[in-house]
Length: 159
Image (tube, rainbow, N blue to C red):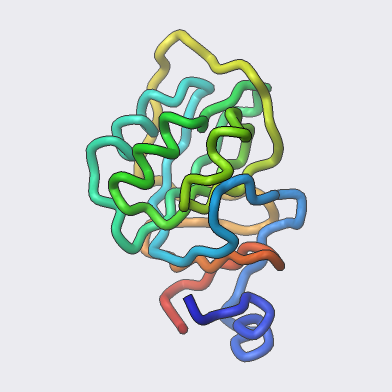
């Protein structure tokens, strides 16, 4: 991947939205890019499991918004599903776990932080919805670029 988010911001200042800096990458690669696929969860990750396990993610980045609770929604198993189905990355407005195991899985994983527990009771999620967190909005079809400097979103692929 031959891009840098700083260069994209400089060259396309009027088309770029920058995610707040508190999101850190816990995945096994330093950068990713792809078309945004959105999902909103209510603590439990069952809808995200279905997405990552059952759908082709080639050229896609999943953006996940989680109801404000302290539970992990992505861990080793979901990262393996994401890698197997060719997802470039996952952005989580929430928490993840299994950081030791996922650090070598070649999928980017940006999140607010870590939490060792997950929410067991199954709850329903919503796919393909407009999300807003971290100072920006996300919708299906947007394009996301992420590297060691941060995460940016544009209405369409520009690089």
